[in-house]
Image (cartoon, rainbow, N blue to C red; front, side, top):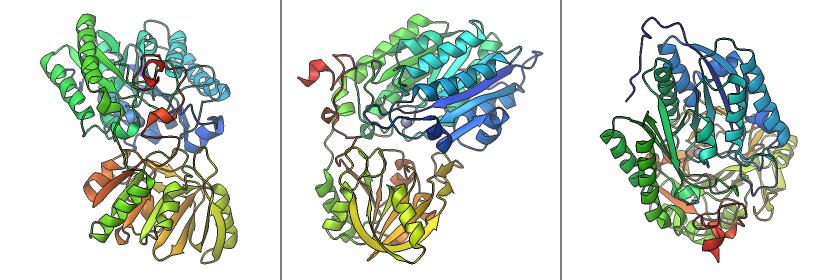
Length: 504
Ligand SMILES: [Zn+2]
């Protein structure tokens, strides 16, 4: 294993460029991801790439910590990420990739490039968008400059990326609590290459499994067992530096969709290939667990949540994993239909409803329709309530995931529907990761029985330890636990369980 090096033994100061371009593209959503969607989430240039990420637990913070310790010089280029939408427009892809290449063109005596990418970006022009980003960066810096890439665990990648990058590091945890450590691993590897101690040899193998996010939590089998086997290889073989198990992003109809194993070894491509093949075969044996598992449907899940509260269990987190646009009305409608009390939904993504509340003003009664504008989100829901809160929807994460990171929900409101029933309305899609997802809107989650949220696994970083119970719900939506309801066309025919050869 490469250890962190405090001194570089008489070397000149290394100059490392840092950049990021990240999107998890849901190719089944009609709305494209445009330049302004990146600005609504996160865009930094130059020194801001370093300064803004220094305090946020993420991949770039990991780069910074290792490089500063080694007295390397860091050059910020561009860092951009956007929320969940459909294909990244050609314009947005060209803009941020172009900005990154331009920034790199101006750097003299560059020693290496560290990129924080996602792995599940697809643009109007490129299904394998990350491979194209790295190809362009490669063209800008030349063949002799190492390029190392970090990816999200939901990466859909194949050899096109590993052919052009020198080393690839996927975060190992879902919820993604180890993004900083992943960045540190990449930065350490970069320094070891520059000092001549390490020659990266990489292998990638795809088991051929597309899996919904809800089955990919890494402290639960089968992902837990895949990781244990990978850790065994890392311990047993000192030349193996890092083993990535990307579970893949299931809501992407792209040719490189599905899980992958990526192994980085020191100058031993053969061993890397053996290990990647071994883990890939093991995952294939466990494909049913990774791709298919029954989850309660809406009505049953709401009944179960209410039963638990009745028994004194609280709070019960009701996790709607299939809503990808934040405006689904299915579960909220069912809670009202079953006459549940003492619950809050965080949140309903509906800028028009927020504006109606703003116009009415605090403490005023409103009658309006909320949600239900997205694909498969259900009909808009008519509600009557009181405007309990109005705000800018900005808050800071305090739980174990993304600690210190800013969340921007846009202008927001809280509707009080009476009998301790609350709905947070936001102008941007919002995924609750910790209790700030309620407290930031003036709600006290400790006083409520049911917390309805839109999340698959990330909320578990906080709620596994603090919730009385978690009830997952497979409501209708664009992120179903049952992938067979989506129509895949570009994926390989033999990929399990949605390729042509399986779905007949
Ligand atoms: Zn992810």
